[in-house]
Image (cartoon, rainbow, N blue to C red; front, side, top):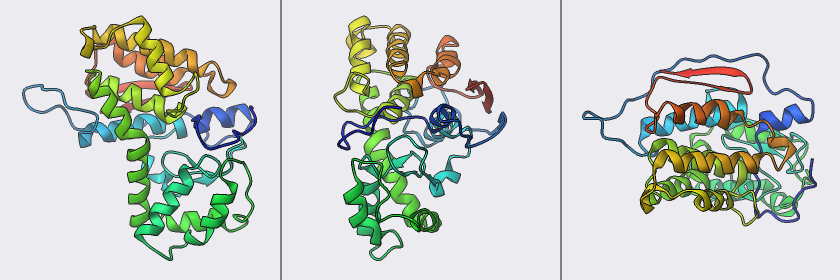
Length: 282
């Protein structure tokens, strides 16, 4: 496992399931098969964006299957653990980290909206530990207080809003600008969740840059399937640069499956595997 970054940017996202496998721990046990019904495309077959509520719900489930081996993403508002990856506490629906700045941003937002909340007292400590794996000023009560805060709908909304601001909205916006449909926008979102959007060679923008060297996106007159294959090739390359990302099944047996089937709109039913576990929506 590489040493912790000296500063919170650029952020390198890491799957909790993959990290736990690397360090010999287990967050969840056994294969998971979940079947749920999601909304279809509007009448007439016109494609919608990933920000359509039904498509966004699918995106949350797909990412949760890779990050937590579950489709029940709303159960992870209360998640809070140190998984030994050098980023301090990892918590919430998208893995906000005490060592990478986004947890601090989240608690600051929550405190702006609800002064005196149970996490507000940790703001000085969160500022001190930012950029490290330290728990100083957080233990032994932080985990329990996070779980208590997670019962508050206002904290849940803050998690949703920070996820969208930092990860979802930028990915969808860039996907639409590149002329990509729902699957392509999701491929961008999953990449930015794992790798962040910093300036390093494995960041989202670098992955996209490698893809652009190989194929044109639809916005430049290219074929969408060809471009997405190039993007996923670049994504796999980036994942393999880190031991914790070496299992590329979230691409190989999930996103590639949808792409091979020509399901550029992520229409249900969807069936895929991550880390060998089967999932189904629809």
